[in-house]
Length: 129
Image (cartoon, rainbow, N blue to C red; front, side, top):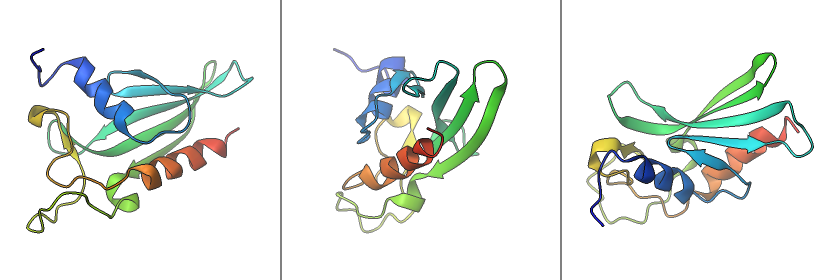
């Protein structure tokens, strides 16, 4: 199979690759978490772009009421929660991120684990349950 650098499958694959413990339904760069037993509210998790085109440095989490719109919004930067790296590049210090045109993979700095980042996002979402 040939990889297309801009295919939605690769976008979704990257988003799913993080160590999420909650069930998230992914569509391209956006995931939906449905609050158990709540038909009105959802958490919308979207890969967040930087000011540079097709560069992403974290996720934005919106708590949304299906009838009234956005209730809350919080941005989570990878660099605020990830520190340990599994790559051997000590010459790159720009932190964690993904660039679309580089194949939807971590750009140079590869986190040893994404669990601390996912825990922060999941803890924020849990506050709204």
